[in-house]
Length: 88
Image 1 (cartoon, helix red, strand yellow):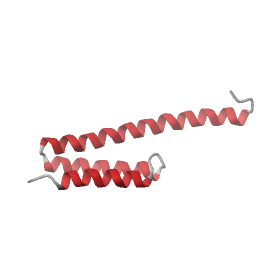
Image 2 (tube, rainbow, N blue to C red):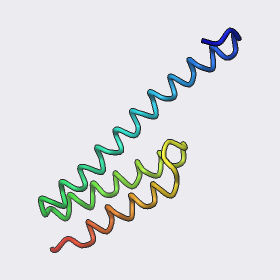
Image 3 (cartoon, rainbow, N blue to C red):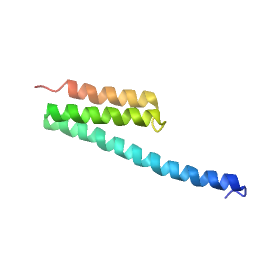
Image 4 (cartoon, rainbow, N blue to C red):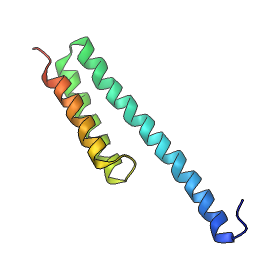
């Protein structure tokens, strides 16, 4: 543990940010999973709605630096491709 007061505060701040980032990443996984579930069920309308929600969540996470911008773009492309390949 650090002896410097500002460093002690910084450690606590980093822990709060770590928890917040973990929660956002977990939520991202959930919304992406919802898209894949809708694709597997064959429900194109629901899949497109979930895709919109997931794309927005990925953009927000990328803008806040929680995930890298390229990773967000790759994930968006992957789920958009899965939805686009659906029949009907």
